[in-house]
Length: 374
Image (tube, rainbow, N blue to C red; front, side, top):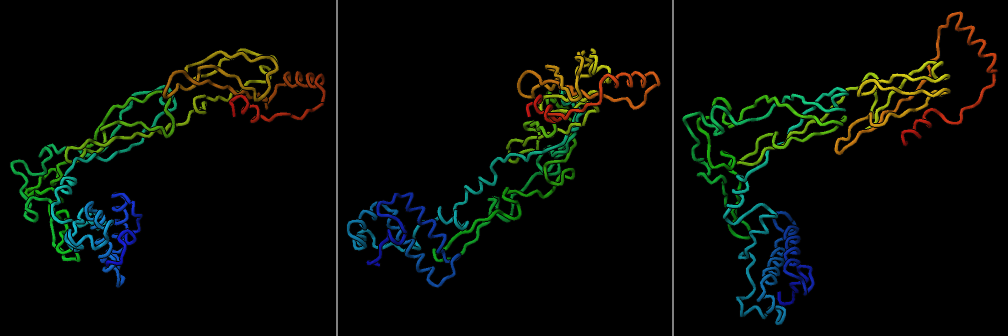
């Protein structure tokens, strides 16, 4: 062993810091531990790794080794026996074993834990999503048992100390390994780590301490929500464990289609038919909006596909102020049935207009995209 280089064994530079030494040791210990690595030389390699780390992780021994080599350790107790090295913190992280104690794992099992989140879907009309509303929702969640008040025991009785773990919440088994006697600590299978068992379970909740209930709650829906919008209600989810906070409730919106209106982000689109006389001569008409009827002036000579904008007649900003606009897309309705008088008038008009046709330079969709910004 005198000819071996501890730094080389760990694969580090001679200037390696304590953290670098520990990282190198962790990686090598994971690779060569005999419980993991079944190759014939794994145990011998593992001994070397532990021996090197035991020396280099000790400030005084490392200084003596750097100056005099392995011989410098003779006055300091010699080369350490790898089986005597205290590696509990590292081995617990790698393999789940401990050298006694176990208090921290017990505390972690009984530490406060946040409750699970719940979710539900809420159906809204088009108008409710635009202007907001108050809606009653119904959810099913766990609540503290009304009979045992959360103890899990039938009223008049209480939990008793677990006989399996003697109230410790964990069971320890001793295992012999190359390190000597090692203690494996596992959660008690009888009490689940609580240290207590319920011998006389509550008949209402069957020992859970919780009972399922249907909760009705009025929720305020803000103006401007859309399909897929989620609202979070803090603390309205499942109850926490060991005094931990409740989870949250997430409400996802589903918005019904409107008979006439279509939504495009914060704008409203409306397809509107006008007759040929209104398009040719112009007119002032009444247009439906989300706020009620509104007057719109149609200029003479309006072409099919013309888009008119009604400012601030759209959807309120969900997070902010102001509203979008309403865009009215005009279509010219061609009559399919004419009286004799109407037909005569159109025939006379046709004589004055001639028969020339002209290709359209822009499609209806191009015009619409220009108005709505793509």
